[in-house]
Length: 168
Image (cartoon, rainbow, N blue to C red):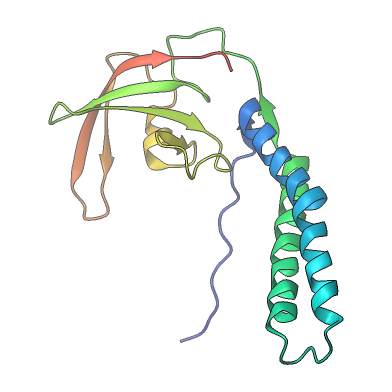
């Protein structure tokens, strides 16, 4: 079996203003704070002599590669992103950046915010606009029903019970 993996589909290029600021802050931190610290540590480790068995040197070089990879990714990604920093005129319909409350068939209520794929991660309730749930939610209004097909083939039904747009 080969190691080939087809390329991932391209991510959407939209991001909220808060998400863009977070990515920009991460880029600045990595470039202006973290990288100089690690570079200094590698320099000190290299001064100790034999680099082939120097764990601090080897680990530091690995850290530098990871930082450089992330900096390169963030720099390229921030150039192509479109920041959505205004609220839509029609606030009764689900669009990018909306907080949407849904009720499932077992009367469990959940609230999600539809954001760009670069913003999901540590924040609970944020879903990527590329996810199946968000794709079904977009352009829905309060009272609309939809279903999501699970990987096992079963379906779960939802109803939109609330739509909210918050100023950042």
